[in-house]
Picture 1 (cartoon, helix red, strand yellow):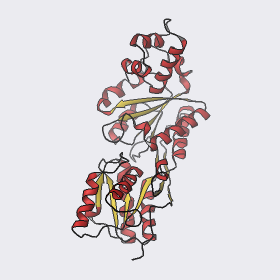
Picture 2 (cartoon, rainbow, N blue to C red):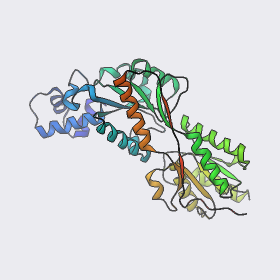
Picture 3 (cartoon, rainbow, N blue to C red):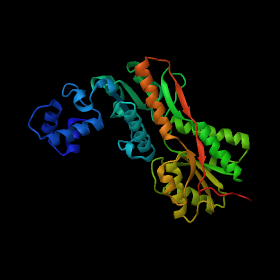
Length: 348
């Protein structure tokens, strides 16, 4: 976030932003408050221009929520995605309850090395909650070296002595697959994100574990690749299904989707080509985002407890700050099935 960006967001000139950040006169109190509020939301403030206390109060009570955006899964508008929107809401809520302010920093992942080097030259903070969804082990390791008060959220690396909080992805996919088998499904397809990350790989492991245990059919040609961040129908998937139908291939009776975005997109895609969920094909998702009750039929899915994830991340970070206990704690939050209307019992 640059001075230009703050000015555009506040609909003011760069000089007005400079005056607000330096505490100098020349702008109205309303404009100053508006600029400082935007600065607080974005999190990127050159220390030379403003004291953090102007925006947040005591720097001893500031937690930073750090995100590295990319062109694939975590975009600049990631906070508008239902899963992250809910997660952030709970993080803010628990920070407030525990007496801490929360600032937000979004950095382009292509500038990773340059930006982590200057991270501590920005507003001082007591600790970082790092969204690790799209990060690799080496990137998390680099951040942790200069930021001992660090909790990584939404991924998991066994080998690092760092605090992690993540949902039980293997368990969730296993539960979903077992549920489909219990409903009589013996031929189950897999809808996979075209962008790979740690969570999705573990969901695939959970699916494979259930396949080995229950013996259902899921062949290589039953794997479909789709964008994981699109709620609308997807033409490539539709063409694959239509081709199978034209060639008289047997379609899976149910589809496990790596997240709810994929599941909702699948339902819309199938409907547009004349196939209905769950009468023709059953669909199960993962995450239990709020949109899962808006789609028709309402989506059966794996519930991820976003509030518990948020609470554990905040609590673990405050423990690091206040108790100086640097023993890495890895918290895995279990999942459960939310049964709605997108899965039908299969009796053939």
